[in-house]
Every structure is written in structure tokens, then in C-alpha cells.
Image 1 (cartoon, rainbow, N blue to C red):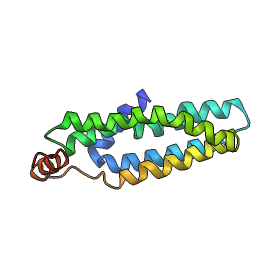
Image 2 (cartoon, rainbow, N blue to C red):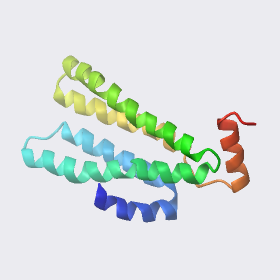
Image 3 (cartoon, helix red, strand yellow):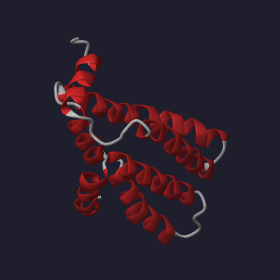
Length: 149
């Protein structure tokens, strides 16, 4: 993921967060679903260490923090902190959820379910993530979001 971040930053500046996130989600979906089809160890290593890592880097903190920094001028730190809370919440929610899914089906079904959840959840958020608004509307959005109007 570290090496992917070097090139992803250029694309975020050029295209904005939305296209990078959408492509990243599609890569994550494909890699997670493909993990349910593996039959050899080398396939698992390739999918997780290359394909999944690239997709994860495209939806990771780099993309989120840069996009939020462009959208929110006032109370930027609080906004980024709220986004970080989502990642922390996932660490609490995913293990029991995936344990239950795997208990109901098998490990292949777990990977497939994870791929669908990964496709649906961020896709909803990426629709709202466009290019940065003008400074006046950006400041107004931050004020409304934090109740200081």
C-alpha cells in the first residue's frame, strides 16, 4: 500500500476523490470475491499482497483525508476525526459479523459476503464525494455540519 500511495496522490489532485474511491472499491470487490475462488496458496498471496493492497490504498485514509480537507475549511480536524471513527468502528463490527457469516455458510461465502458489503457501503458514500466546492460554500457546509450557524 505504501508504494501505491505515491501514485494515488497524483490522481487525487488531478481527478478528485470520487473517481479514485470508485475504482478502489471496484478493485476491492474483485479481489475479495476472487479470494472465494482460490485453490492455491500463490493465488491468495497475489490477491492480498498486490490486488487488494492497491484497492485498499485507493479508499484508505490518504484519499479520505485529502478529500475532506478540500471540502471542510472550518473544523477540518473534527471532520477527519469523525471519518477515522468509521475505520475504528469497522474493527469492532467486522470480526463478529464475518464470524457469523462464515458459521452460516463457509469461508468462501464469507469472502463473497465481504466483497458485496465492501461494494455497497463505500459506493453510497463515494457518490457524495466530488471535487472541492468553492471556499464560501465549503465554509458554509462545515458550519451547517457542525451546527455553528
